[in-house]
Image (cartoon, rainbow over the protein chains, first blue to last red):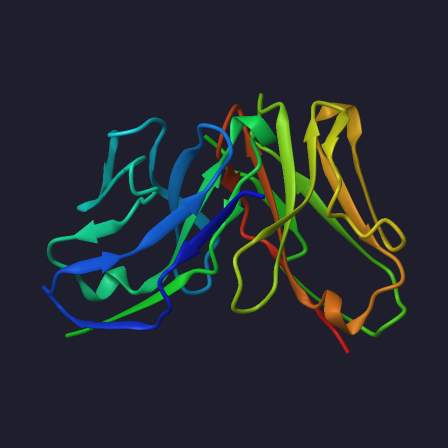
Length: 113
Length: 111
């Protein structure tokens, strides 16, 4: 079945460091890909998404490119801030299987000043 | 635009008791989901509604969990009787298409 694999956390960075969180997926159809973020004590928020191969999603300085050839959707940010500390979830929605999201296990990011 | 509303935010019950969660989706969203998020894991779909009808309940433990969507708007999720392993955050989401907008969730602790 469809699945999402994220890099294990926690990821600990200093402010202004470069961030990469790896995400790969397995899907039978043509999925849409998503990154969600969960700040401490808050609900899941959509960070960015891409709906087809080679699309780049971006928001708040974060970017991810839908790579069909490597089945990947890695999250990147050039300069992280303390306020980016949160749990990041990669997810897919495969039209073949309906519209529900399939999530990875999440990656905890901790940024220190 | 109002977001997805859920209540209660927190609930503590003893095992074998029953509990119910309520969700009000974003106005106009035909699709509503309930997810279970166990600590340290990603959310897992329990049930998906399209308007009044159930689209997918394959991962819903039907011997103890039930859900309904009233008039294609609000939804309730019920657990009866609860087990210790049901301790989790229960997330409601609604969507006009792929993806979803999430509520803040209900944190359930079963003791």
